[in-house]
Image (cartoon, rainbow, N blue to C red):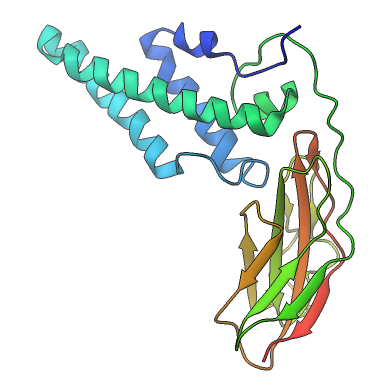
Length: 232
């Protein structure tokens, strides 16, 4: 039985006045709601959004101007479908057959065999060292079945204990910046897939705290415990 994937037939059979709404749902699912789950899409959000707006503009011109505008509309529709195909290929790779991940991205899922992926455990044994001047290098262990290793770095204080990662990859910041508490001068993120993260142009004699998160088709791990070091 075939594995579950994004249904290309679903969006390619949509009516012309429905395709842009569907593409907007994909944009929100991939870029807005789940950036930790989909950290490296093949198109950046601005490029994909331009495909949608160009489709809308040429469709309106075709509706109002007739056959002379059809060629531009056909080209815009083909470009939007090609962009959806690129994102569908990427989401399929991340989802690894998990229908919930596909629908989180805004796509419809085909019928097939569910992936056996298991949500990753909390990262352990984080390694943090100094690089060249004003540079820190962080690394997490390699774990089988993990698609991405995401990293958070803070300066001056660790993250408050109330801050965490939800099961679908959203960073929870309850009452962030309100009321008394430690002053966190900087929050940085590295969404690349690599296990080794390099942070440069930091502050001399400042203490930095590093956290890792594992991501795979089944979900997002809890935040690791912080590892700290003074930058030189």
